[in-house]
Image (cartoon, rainbow, N blue to C red):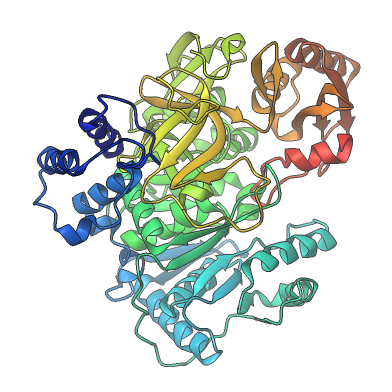
Length: 625
């Protein structure tokens, strides 16, 4: 049983008012009625349950809620991994026989050892101090090369400052839009310094000016400064300012502490059982939580080998990514569903003839809706070459939780087909069918279970009043624990994701099935139809299945316009008469007769975040605002 769930059980067992289901933010004294005697009995039970030494009085100061107890017990059980100092610990004794490789534009791989990267980071820390960067200052990073990025990121941390990655401009994207976007993020970050690739320093200078910031914009220097001793971090010190994708509003800044990062990286290492010599391969962007924390920081802290390519290099040749796994022995890869679907569209079976995927141990799937039929097709393509469906690890996470929240444990992933007419807030969701990946029938309505919560996190599904719901009931997913950012989010409260004390209310709707989390959509991207929630993601999946329009070409926005329920379909290709008729039929049937609007146009019509998610709220404002 996860640590958080067992702590909650023991709290319920010892509550003076009798067994209850305490929410994570619940205060032990004020909300649950604990007195000194009951608190002492609870602490003794925790010591016995988790085989811990007696707690010192000083350790217990400030532990006032269920979430506080969970964090405390977790830190006692696994200090060697969750230690906040682990993030910088590798700088003191870096490996010379392992490091990071990256794909150059000439198609050749280049490598820097962890020893080389650590030395460069410490020199950069000394140079940053010469530039007037002080502990606690924010330094924004827009660096495409992974060697430069790692040098700058850890140089900033070693100087005691706070790195804040920003997305580079999109190829063929509007430069004016990028400058506006960057100015918004810089206004939130208020950096002391911006480190950027030479090709975009002018653009970021314009953005900084627009944000009325006096900070300097400069390329990363190949400095010869004498390396410095890393700043000794406080676990509560801010270690990273990362931005949300902005899929449900403008991006917001999430401030993560050393403790948050250490806890989440520790969770991921334990979850994967990441070996010291296991090769990880990634094409995800470095400014995105999944690419940064899951695919970059975790292997670095583990000091295991890492091979990276840029997203545009993956798009040009996904077979190059597969060859890292089928020819070069990579064991761990991470991708949203899009990556697997795109690979299917570009790689023919005959191209895999000389590849062996039997060493591919983990394929984490997250960041967007996990489509079981896409994963099933991908597995079928690679199974003749040693790939196993249990390699897939569907997962759920979000930037406000640092990254990882749930994940499957290596079993063949489970898909279910709920009765969507029972998707009523606070009510039990009826499940019509379930099937392991590999035998999921074709057709709409299937969703993938995203695994159990990581042991140190307490995940609950809440009703509209914030009360925990039993398993199987639809509500809002809420999480608490040591990797949850409890700092106020920068950039306003337009998102449904918000803090309630130390508990993160995610704004995602879901339920628990067989101990696993099932996420069905965003509460802000839905309509109530005949009393149930209709989610944009499910509507898109049905449109893809029933019209044949590719998944990457559409987005749906839902809302109320002129007092009427309205569904907007935005499609990046012309529709045949049959496709348009089929789309209208699906939208009318599923929305219960809402007003329907269909917009078609070229690629780029669907507004997307820098991580590729549809910006539904902005699409709604464009067409119905």
